[in-house]
Image (cartoon, rainbow, N blue to C red; front, side, top):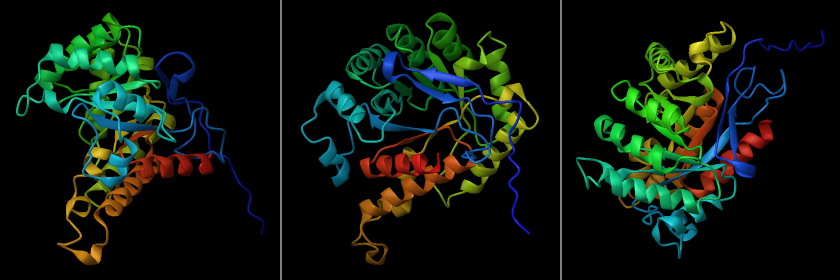
Length: 313
């Protein structure tokens, strides 16, 4: 009996969120099918790939990353080089030095650095904070102000600071905001509701529902994304119809497989290749589960995931 394909598409769709300006602006979301189901209906905007860099500079302890950024000194040069990475759609700057438990760089200094980065970037800019909710509330408010007109994405607003971040980012200065929750569909929806109650429209919000490196509890991430997409499309749940952005790099390059030297466990092979493999595996899994964009570090990973996306579209 011949196989008859029955397309599964929905009247509901994921909202489209645009970051950046001009010819390099990037649209996230907009699809009305399950993740990568281009055989059911054309996907309006393919998943996107971002390049992550720290405000401290790229990780020059990893040979492939060091080689790519060779000769690039200062945030402006590094951001420009990141935007030239083959397969990159946007650049994501992590403000690690703002952490109060670390360097505790001032809000003003971080904002000035972001302004310099935005001026140099040829691609849309995503800003990740210090992971300290109190500091990030103040940080994102100032950054939203100094980057007015750039249409950047501030990733991410948490329940503890969502008022300060969302109001400043969207209502006051016309940026985009990410809603960050901890791998739980109910927490993700609750935060989206809280942000919407401030008057922030869904077209200005993306979700960061959490992540983990492949093999490290990633099944919880996958099941959360599955449930979010099913509720958004099959149940037309407006509070879950925001695109998902997943910062993969931080988790992928922090696990044992990516940091243990070849001398310690020679049978595992080269350390850098293990990190690349972990980053690619995690990104591919996140895209398959429902992420509309992933953020990576290594040029090999960015090229591989960009090819992965294009061949599935």
